[in-house]
Image 1 (tube, rainbow, N blue to C red):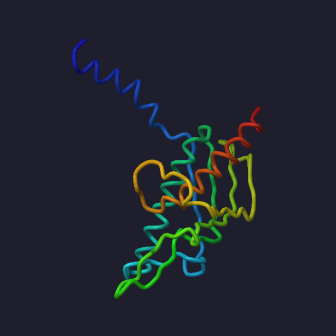
Image 2: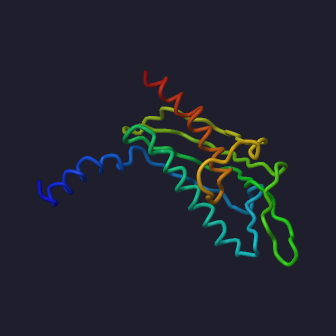
Length: 168
């Protein structure tokens, strides 16, 4: 088999694995009203808030890929308290991560199927992880690791099983 045919065959086999099953739509409130989404290192608030939104939206979309094809994970973030706390460190403000500054997020969500029918929803979901530093940190360092892990754990431990039992 020549090289072009091998590449084409590999693409046919591999590309479906990268197809998105579900998608996420995230709605934010005013970041200044959230409990703690303050930037450290004297970075501009607006740029920091955009970075937070971009990172979390990417993460919600990654989770939504685990949903059945055509499903949409709609999230409205009502409050956010990032892991750590911004404190003065000499001339700079730094986000210090300590066990007493645990991550919290409050949100409303709905999951709709490909026909737009709501298959799961809840208002005022409140997540927090008071023992976030007591668990082994898996994988590479990434922005907002503890906050994303909190959301991932809820998604995999509560949302996905409830969807699977509803479909059965």
